[in-house]
Length: 262
Image (cartoon, rainbow, N blue to C red):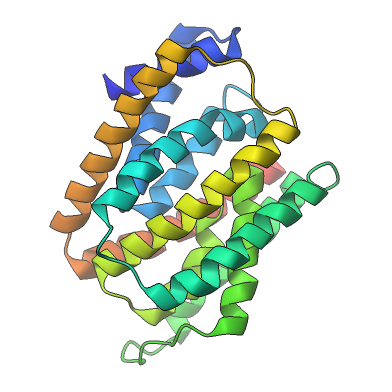
């Protein structure tokens, strides 16, 4: 039902979508967004590429923003006791700066070029970790300068196509935070970033008219998706969780490059 709600929302919002061909994509997109806000951050990046099979990527990013914001509310409540305060102090201001930069350069930036750059960075990070980083390395501290750099890039890429996960994970994963703290910190950072994207998206005229009944169904989609993701996050062992996050980063980085090139 949650997936059907998103499908109906998107069909009504676009006013021209063929629901029978768009429904399977909307179903998958609904679960990806919901699971990401429940604690599986890399999964959410799949939503825009999936919908881009049917509609323009920038339109897909704008159409998905409401479900991100609604599910963020649930995610913040679910992880209200699990977050790293120092990371929030560094990454939230940096992410908001990235959103502002994205707004300024939106008419000029090459989405394809940015996707390729972010994808290459993500691939490099994963390969370095898998093949060149000792397994017993100590956790890295949350340093201000790298945090501002990766946080700004995360906000910028999130503004363009909800692809803020790779820069964020490159900075946070080496800190080896506890699983729930990692998930909660991710939730708080991207909740702030997604909310900040709303005024610029409106100013740029990205949003079509949206049906209020569909938005009501969208709320149910967000709640069910975030709740399911939180349950899965608590069940998955820590080692499996972070291995899956890094593997997801690698796959999504390849996806960004593939989508930009082809």
